[in-house]
Length: 398
Length: 153
Ligand SMILES: Cc1ncc(COP(=O)(O)O)c(C=O)c1O
Image (tube, rainbow over all chains, first blue to last red; front, side, top):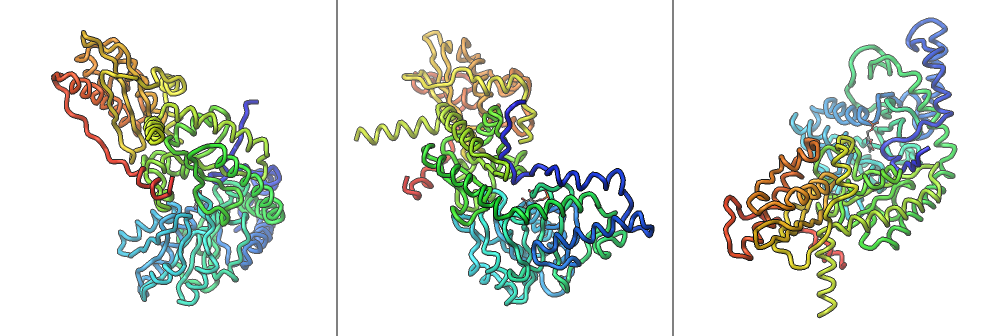
């Protein structure tokens, strides 16, 4: 078999065999529509009820506060558009950050076209939102604060409890896009004052096409998909039973193994960071050194461009990404890297490696060795590096 | 990276095995074009003999796979040509020689054409001659130095 080292787990993850096994019968045997009246379907409905309990437990929510969606993007859209619509007589101002996923940013842009005003908070050089700046941005007409739990590109974990506290104090709804954090870091919607939370199955070894929006009881939010009475009348569409059961299985595994997995990933992540920074000159780590997801690394290599690097990594069997996978097809470098203050040229030279529980020390070492060769090769053909070396020589002579 | 899968075999070959990468000691003409914002910077060196024929061409490129491949192909295409013929190596010619480019990468071929023009411009200036149809290339600002100064590198 050809070598493959998958280090793009922030893009998507492998469905675990146990998860797939859980899902299978609900395609071919237990295929009844859980909304139907007969016992054949009732069995499925019962399994879904149990699965929902399991998922709610992970974030200290109640099962009736979990609404299944098609994924993180839909949940983000629903939270923002749903609250904007439900509270339009109360206000028209939303606060978010500059480093959100496009599912948030593009939804905000859409809402701006509808007459809403959006404040995009700056972040510091590590990607952290400043809670004091957030509090200052609050106006009488602010109806929603949406700040991501952890960033998908640079892995920085935001001060969510602090933001929740501020939102709560001012009586403003707080939504968090927790797609990268859910199942990876402990989340407590009560302690953190979270009113809405988006999560997605495929980032935690679950299936694609299933996600959820947690909505705190009593939150005013308009329905999103109109149709049948599924999801307590708030999100129509025949229930995705295999998806929900797979998602739930992935959640129970993630929750059971969270500590063990975090320890494993952190050890390898730190090995990767330390080796890269010490063995490859002119490299830098993007994102917060400590406050970051245990599986995330993001580097810039000066004088070289990210896509070339990715192709050469791919030739060595290493799957990584440059900026957000969603950024490909666009020529602009990542908005996240620009927001932490990197110039365009350096932002173009970024690579993200996101680990999993299955990543090994050999994988990391092979990746570092490959990177060293590739970076050297690309620098040898870079006019920027040529100029740099010439300048260094000159300054040594003088 | 969706566009990578759209790269032709020829393009991938010129990326993986770029022709004429390097520098030149005393080039007849050298030109650097591109824009840090778009993430592509190309430098082309030309060695031109007394009959105004391009004897040797070298390049260095900072950029994506397509940027490297178009530079590589551009150096191949100008070698052996007269200055006037080299001026007629268009972005389209570079693109066709690579069996096409994904639409979002077409600007790379334009950059390769500009790199040829910039090197020819330098040659014309050094030798105080006029190459018919050649315009002065434009240069871009560089924000990177500032950043690293701030970081104390
Ligand atoms: C932070 C964040 N939000 C939202 C999404 C979108 O999730 P989905 O792919 O489930 O729609 C992603 C996935 O890339 C993400 O990383």
